Structure formats: structure tokens, C-alpha cells
Image (cartoon, rainbow, N blue to C red; front, side, top):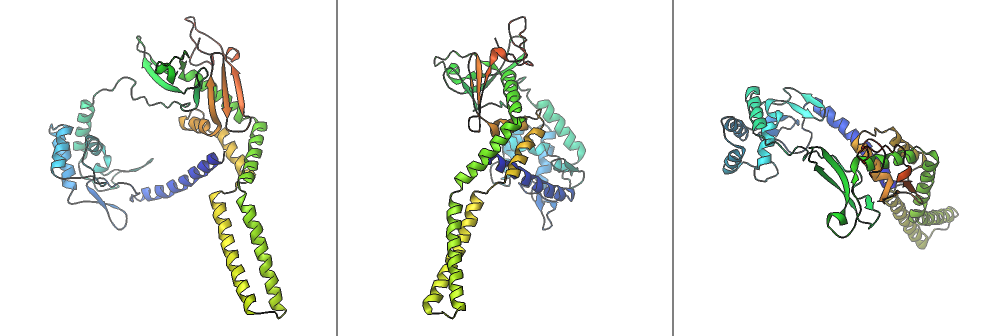
Length: 377
């Protein structure tokens, strides 16, 4: 829970940084990262044309427009000794990114901020469009669903209930051309004797998200989590109370010596003892500060606020769904007749009997609907 809370506030800090960088973007200033070949950044952080490499960039566009292949352009650029900012050799990917980079027609872009004519143009729009059309025409068509990089939410979380091994994401296309995604036991995949059937990705993920959402909106559970987080912080942060006790004792000893001095008792030993105690006090204060920085104490209100923020997220957003799974689920065990979910809090365990799952609407061909919560038969 504390790790998730720290991640949330890191994301909040990142948003503040993004706002500052967006302000820079509106002024078309350099926002960090690699500088595109053909440009340099001046003292005021604006892009300027590099007189050495800009002509090479323009010639690269012209060569490809004239019929040269990407491989030929790569060889030509490496022969000329041109290198990216990080010093590596020019590769096919480097050239493809270069030929698609709209900065070369003067377009400045940072996230959603786009400023036409925000930087000096190196190539004209007609040449850039012709190159783009040729790239699109020469691009090899990928496998129909190969690059469909939809995340498997339950990776490293879902285990086979029969053998305990991970169940990993798999995909394939049926004879009818329909694309399927599912989770498969590693031991089944590697032919190690397990007989667990594969499970459809959409079905298992929807079921887990339904149970996770129900837990998240249960105020009783949320309050239990908050109490456990607070108890955990108090138990883990044992160093601070010890240091604070020593600091109090040192402060009291200093006050006693000062009182003695006020009564006229002042010797060489008293002075040395006072200096030693003051030095110890400074060191203890620094130790406490470092300990608090290393293990910051999070207030109950902030923990509650963080947990309630999860309720406001869009469950259609894959990133939000993944954040929920990572933050709250420890492990999931899938058996033939039930699903056991263990959450990231003490005694947080939920058993779902697949026979009793709402929405059992098996199709006529004896297979479950991906949109329903029915177990695959």
C-alpha cells in the first residue's frame, strides 16, 4: 500500500513537471532529450538549424524520394560518418524515424501541444509528404493481429490452481480468421504434465476486475486497509522513536547545564560537556530527518484520499486497470471450479465459485461469451 501511495504522489509530481514543460512547449523551447539530427539548441533553449548536419538531412529525404531504399540510405549515412546524438551508428529505425519526423517541416510538438512553424524547417512540405507516401507504400503489412500489443493485466499474478505455475498470455488466430487471446499454464505450454485448460483473457480479466471493484467500493474493507497501513508504519518506523528519546534526553541535559551556568557554575569541563551535547543534538536531529525522509510517515487522511482516488478512475483505461491490479492484487489461483484472489492486505482473500458466477450464459456450441462472466466450459 505504501509503495502504491508513493507511486501516486510521484505521478502527481510528474504532472507538475509536465505543466512546466508544456509552458516551455508553448514558447517552442527545448524540453530535454535527444536533439534531432540537423538541429542544435541555442543559449535561449530554442532550436536552430545545424549548418553541418542539416544539409545531410535534406539530402536524406531527397535520396529516398528519388528511389533509394532505406538500407541504401543507412549505408550512405554511415559512410559519411553521421551519428545520432548518443554516438551510435545510424540504423534502419533511425532513418525511418528521421523520415517521419515532422520537426523537419517546422512543426514543434510536445505531448498534445503542436506549434506549426515553431522551429526552422529543413525540408519543404511537398518533399516530406512524398517521402511519407513512399514509406507507407513500401511498409510491409504486419501479421493481422501481431502488433496488437494489448496488455495482459494478470501477468505474474495469475497462477494455475492445479500445479501452481504462472499462467501466461497467449494469442492466436482460428481457422475462421478470428483472433483469440487467453491465459495458458506454463507447465501445459512446456508439456510438463499439467492438464489445466486455457482460459479466455477477456473472461478472466473481467471477472477479476469485477471482484476488485467490489472490494474497492466496500468502505469497511477500505477502513481496514487504512488501519493496517497506519499500524504497519508505526511498527516499521521503530528507529525514529528511539532517536527521538535520545534527542529529548540530550536536550534536557543541555538545559540542565545552562541552568547551572546561570547559577554561576562554569568550568572548563562544563564548557566541553555543553559543546559535546550540542554536537550530539545536531547529529540526532540529522539522523531523525534522514530516517523520516527514508521512511516518510503518511497521514491517515492522505492514505484515505489515495485509496478513494482509485474509485474515480476510468475502468476502460488499460493503464488504470493495470494500476489497480498492481496495487491491490497479490496473487490469483485459478482452479477448474473456483477462483481464489489474494489481495495485498492481511486476510484479504476472496474465493469465487465459477458455477455461481452471475451471467452464466453459455452459447449453443458450449462455449462462454467473452462479454459475460461465465466460466469457459
